[in-house]
Length: 167
Image (cartoon, rainbow, N blue to C red; front, side, top):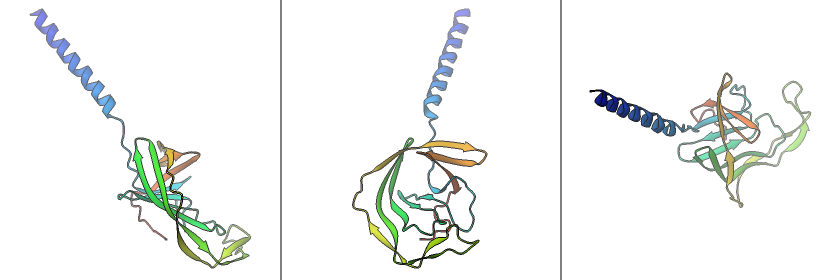
C-alpha cells in the first residue's frame, strides 16, 4: 500500500515537473508588432513624431517627425520580418520632398526660424536593399507598451497601422 502511494506520488510529481518545464519553454512571448508605434510617447497632437507602421502583409512605413519643417526625407517604405526579438527591415523606397524655398518660420506655430516651404513629395526607389537588423527589447510600463531599438523607445499609439495616414 505504501509503495503504491509512493509510486503514484512520484508519478504525479514527475508529471507536474514536466508540465512546469514544458510551460516554461513555451512561454516565450510572441509579440504583435502590427500597428502604429511612435518614438518617446504614445501621445499625439496635430502630427506624429518619428513612427513605424507595421502592416499584416509584411510591409512597413517609417515616417520622420512631422514637426521637422526642413527635412527632405519624409518616409522610408519596405518589408519587415520579426523573428523572436530580431526585427529585419529591407527598405524598398523612400518619400523625398523636392523643390520648395527656405523661408522664415511662423512665430508661435513652427519650431524653427527657417523652414522649407512648398515642394512636392516623390517616391525614390532604394538601390541598396541590404537588410537592417535590429534587436528589439519589449516593455510594458505605466507610460504604455512598446519596444526599444538602439537608443529609441517606441510606444504603441494604435493597433491599426492605417490610423491617420498622411502619405
